[in-house]
Image 1 (cartoon, rainbow, N blue to C red):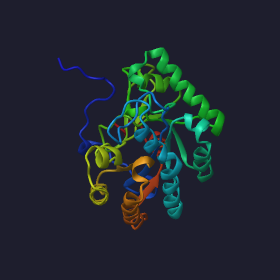
Image 2 (cartoon, one colour; image 1 turned 90 degrees about the vertical axis):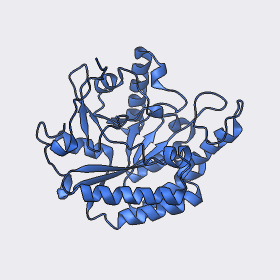
Image 3 (cartoon, rainbow, N blue to C red; image 1 turned 180 degrees about the vertical axis):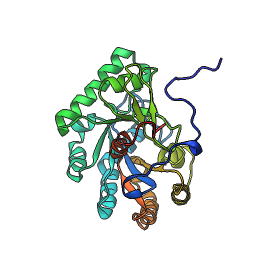
Image 4 (cartoon, rainbow, N blue to C red; image 1 turned 135 degrees about the horizontal axis):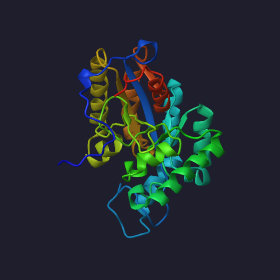
Length: 295
């Protein structure tokens, strides 16, 4: 028998109940900024440069550039449009780069739990260790921001068999690790409390596309514009979520930023047709819909 997760049943997207986003919008759009920090000389980290023996100076400093330079270029861009963001932020940012957290706070952006650092993975922890990690991250955001995050994205988009259960038990209402749909989907948990899976697209994410897939920035922007246009067309009959996922250490470089600006100009020209929002607002809206609306 085929092994399965038991978190959600199969549901074809063209046979579900119809609903809309606020103001009768059909396409929800949100931008997730991955704000990550890495220890010097140890742990995991994306190989932006061919890996070197530790201390791996080229890779460490390239990632560090994202917090020193790249993130501030992204703030300037989104300030121009006065659009909210979702900060998928490692909590070690509070200790080592507190100005970044302060900038998101001043903008009124949403903070999403993203572990302590992206140098560790939950799948390498036992359940007690993972539970402690999730609660530590939750409690630190609560202490610093005055409210706990409602959403979670695992470092490296990584989970154990128990992650959805632990998140629900810790009070989280949604998770962004599961990429099985273009609409939110409820996940079953052992406590009976459902956890909402918010789409976080991998095929259009800047890191796997431009770095992993070696796609030129101009072509990436063309792909993202095509994705937006086609999803806007499809959303006339099916409510959908378009996700823009960005890493400052990658997209913040000027030769990439120029194409991100082109993409944002295209989306901005259609803002009257879409709901630019945050994943937390999407989760809140879904929780208020009639029962059985969300599969």
